[in-house]
Amino acid sequence: MKFARIAFATAAIPIILYSAASAQVSGCDICHAKSDFKRVLKSGRIQSLYVDQAMIDASVHTGKQCIDCHVDIAEIPHTTKPQPVNCGQCHYEGNTVGAPQRNIKQEYDESVHAQALLGGNTEAPTCQECHGSHQILSHEDPASRTAKMNIPRTCGKCHLEVFAQYQTSIHGVVLGKGNEDTPTCADCHSEHGVRSHEDPQSPIYATNVAQTCSHCHAAEGIVGKYGISSGQVDTYDDSFHGVAMRFGMRTVANCASCHGIHDIRADDDPASSVHVDNIPETCGKCHPGANANYAIGKIHIEAQNPDAGIVYFVASFFKWLTISTVCALILHIVLDLSRQIRNRRRDANH
Amino acid sequence: MKDPGGKVLRFTLNERFQHLALMICVVLLVITGLSLRFADTWLGRAVISLEGGIEARGVLHRLGAIGLILLSAYHFLYVVFTERGHNQLMAIRPAGRDFRDLLATMKINLGMNSAVPRFDRFDFRQKFQYWAVGLGVFSMVFTGLVLWFESPSMAVLPKWVFDLTQVIHSSEGLLIFVVLFLWHIYDAHLRPGVFPMDHTWLTGRLTKEELHERHPREYERLFDAEEEEVEK
Image 1 (cartoon, rainbow over the protein chains, first blue to last red):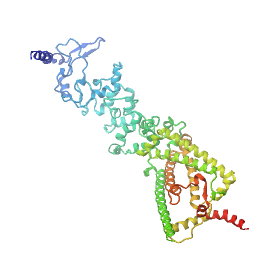
Image 2 (image 1 turned 180 degrees about the horizontal axis):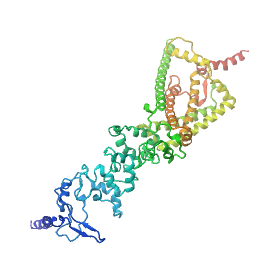
Image 3 (image 1 turned 90 degrees about the horizontal axis):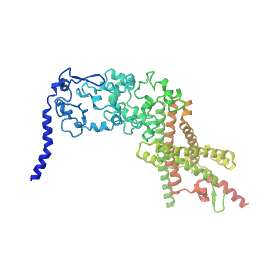
Image 4 (image 1 turned 180 degrees about the vertical axis):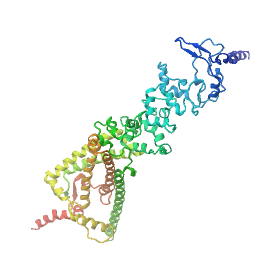
């Protein structure tokens, strides 16, 4: 009994100490609420250390104490620079503090961003680069850095060239008009788990591209609103390209091979890779010697659809020819058999 | 062409080999072709994986095509430049009688009264099947080559003609399969009287009775003259 009591007391000491420390650290605002609180970095730059309480109150983390995130601060004034906040301490599935029930940290750990960070790239983004720190807003808040309208700019802080391409693409132009049906970076690349296009689990891996585009381009409720056919993914699936792709041939064309990636444009845009004048060059990437013939006739056709014109009529002709041939041959078998039976009966009667 | 065993040689060894080669090529082409047409069904996927995957399927299909093209060329030379082959070609020419035989057969099958048609060396169905196979092989080889060599063909053909070629090749392949399965297999295997198999394609021979029953005109030409000679 005595031993157990000692063991309990020993175990309780750090807990009590920790609670005491937490309780002590409550006066951060003594310094950090001063708007001119700052320090001079070695580089000579001045870093403001002011934390606007109103900003935190307006954020998703309203009500949290400083030390809920800055867990390494045990006393004030603190003598060392606080460690970067580890968001994963709350943002995991099963947390009890009210954070979303998602294993976001795990998703991030598998992303190219986390891999780059592990590889020693100090520029690689952690949570804060995209979400901010004290001012984190829900992605549903239009002012959030991760609001749909702001995502390209958030990613564009590092991916400048891609951002510029996206801005002039049909998706970017439409987003610029305030339309949220159009995809931004995260719709194709996913959010926390951004993977390389060479990773088979990536939504932009060659064999996954059609599936990714189909989220919108096979949805009548999305592209249908703008007069864009929702059958383009089906017709692709029907084509040689689509069939070969489904069987794992990575060398055949996927959506992006012809339409471009960040620079996708409408087919009537002269700068589009699928504009009629650019088709020879686009198809020529894989089919040497591609010429204007490649643009004579619809590209996305479905033989079962009257839109396919003569291809549809010939396919229908063969369909009915085959059906009537089957019927005629079955009839022939029945008639031939019945004749043979008649003959046998007649022979038997004789 | 008679031999002492009371049997009549209808197809020479050379002709039987041509038929065997055609059978092997067509079976290979039908299996590898239809598995692509039905690549989205479980059966299509299963057959493609048996064929060694989508690329191996294509290689097998093209091997079958090369076989069929070589066979066609050989057959063409055979019927044009050999006496035996040429005589066979002449015998399988369509004639007016074939149409009358067709009508008579249909009447009999429908239970109406008609004289039983008396066939010569090739009956109207055999003739039709021969020429249908010829036409089928020609158009399948032609459309198949367009699809095989897609870059040279697209250099001269617009995209829509290429699409059309693909639809024709694929649909005709299915049609050929249906005809072979429901007609030729019935004729040569399942029909009462020949079940389980008409052995002519292997032995090349019919008995005199079978010849008399199925090809009475040819029988008369071969044997009645002989009997007359004997009588003299």
